[in-house]
Image (cartoon, rainbow over all chains, first blue to last red):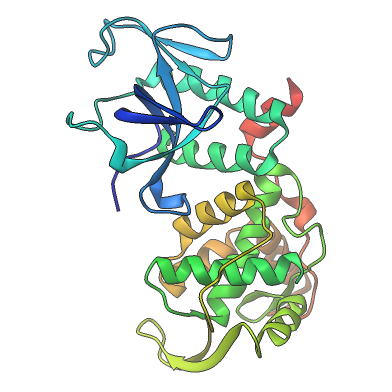
Length: 134
Length: 176
């Protein structure tokens, strides 16, 4: 079992986009760790991109997050199940959300999940993130 | 198969993946009780659509609905055996899966929620699991009533899940 936690920033050689069935090299933010996923090599992630895709994203400044080449955005409107075997050769995790980032991300994610009406996904994420915050 | 039966099988499968080949009845009752507690806490609703109830017994909450579900599952899906475990001096009734669980009708997010509960409690010794159960709001309310009535155990008394406080982050969302 890997030790990646919610809030870790990982770098994937092949990040899988569930909706388009395509792969691309990307950074990602862990939403739920492998320990509670059905398969031990899986993680539930948000993609991190260089473009702000929607309002439901969090800006991660290059100055604060040294792993990025430029300002980046964690996109919370979509989530994908990733395989740890698709991680790049970089030393992982490449970073983690700051305390301030966690607070802001948590508020956006709660809102997105509540809006989507998926009660148990919302409940699981709140429960898991609270464990890390405390 | 109803949701309770499916949840029992899923819990047993997850326990096995976490290195526990079986669960004692005590562990199973307490995990199902904590699942229901956390469901009320984080969604404001019963995980089982209020189709099961828990009553006070001398070692905490038990449920006739769970006994009934185990009876229905025992021939085809589960084994009921008696085993001695390290953390308890007497042997206990234990439950294990007969075969690998291939399919369940639980929603993906419901499974994740169960996984989150399993991850928190599955490795705890019986004593610690018991003290967590006794610290839940319905049990605290029951202990208070027992104190008031000056009885040791209000055996058979139904535990009240409506007294569970909603998590503050969930409350914030609803209020917003």
